[in-house]
Length: 211
Image (cartoon, one colour):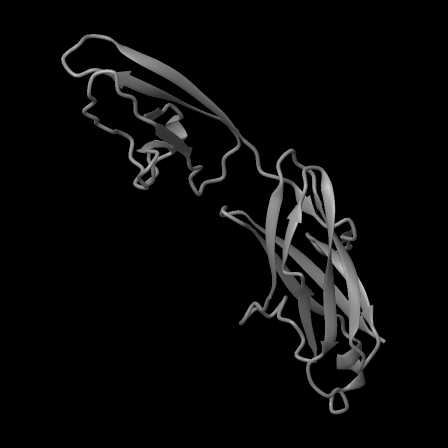
């Protein structure tokens, strides 16, 4: 098996590969000794390398018999698309080069927020969600008085569909010792969504205000 895309030639993994149906090791070549009137089953696999790539991946399967001229070829073509995943509640803010999801939380009270996640692609997507604390980041480091959880943290989104999940915002520590000016500053939290069986990662930035 071979891949014809020049931009994918230097990857360390096979793009197209083959294995016997009862085995689990994929390779770009497979040799087989067959008895007369016998048959064998194979499975083809495509693994898109961990590079930013959209478009067509073309390849070919070549089947030949040792000692005989000629071969049978089967052309392969696959379309690669990066799904557009976003939250309809994301808003643009002046002075920021990214969109945020704005929430308002009553001081000292745990609150739940329904969060829609939209999949604007033709393929179903399984998204694994979790809140990420960027340690050492001055700009986006989350305020210590707020903690966030997401449940369910694994959601399945149908093609061109929307799925709801719930974000719980709750105090992380007592607020009595914090200055009023510090309490009124918005806290920013980052939720990441990893596409299962893929290297794709999406981020959602929350802008949380206390009142």
